[in-house]
Length: 394
Image (tube, rainbow, N blue to C red; front, side, top):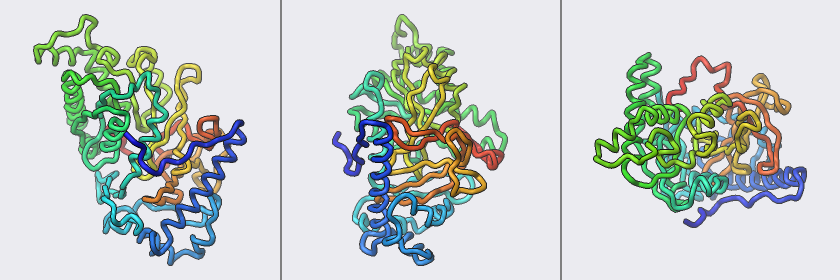
């Protein structure tokens, strides 16, 4: 499949310092272009054109790069609750077909984000990071994650198609899981989780040659448990299919070679357990990611025992930026290795988000060769909000 127009050019440079400098220059140029687009009368986004009337600066003349993004107010997610959703569609894209993706919504109105091509570009960029040895081109995928109005559903389908495969999916309503947990209906939540895993077992028994999968840490563990209990072998017998001589009691035996996973439940402890016990000591490749409907997708450095299974995420700059800031002063970035709240910014033609305070915290990570800009590790629910955060299937 051809690339979707809009993928940024790769960063160049023979040394890390040079790559960091070039990445920053590319970010500044990209921000200038994004601001011109969203705040120009002909192409701008109705929400931002109206909001600009309250600013004490002119975005078209007073924003020259990343440092000037601090002039904007911090993005408030409540701006995305309720409609009309068309106020978020830039005039320059008004003739395009529009998707709407939702996040939240367990109580009150969900946050809605309009999307045209962004999810395709984000996942094509992510595809470039996947090793073909474990994610073979042309292989089919299993989407063991949320369905409904979620970005992930279409994004994983597009990723599979972009790599020449076909995506099989299950029905999963994460809002129902969160509702059960909030109402302390734990047995009901566990029964629903098993219902989702049973769907995945049925797909894996269908003979579709599925080699790649998206899932979350909790669902990965639940799938592994069901496979170990012989559920896939039982399904084969139910379908009157012969069970292979080696059995079907592991993720590797089920034919999966590569797993793209996401969720704040990733910890070094879980990753070590998954690597050693669920993924045959790395014979099945797993790449954690950190993303959401607002930002897109942050990829991780390769993980393994050599670095204690530490997970560090890097945003798809220049389309998005991650900052780790002092919780008491969002304009102050913490030192490398320091702990702070995660701020996300998004800069695309479809969506402009200046410095949104996420419900997560982590440690600031330095640039490295592949991603010559700041990252974040140890992502977890923001400590000041942790008591009100229900993770559900993620």
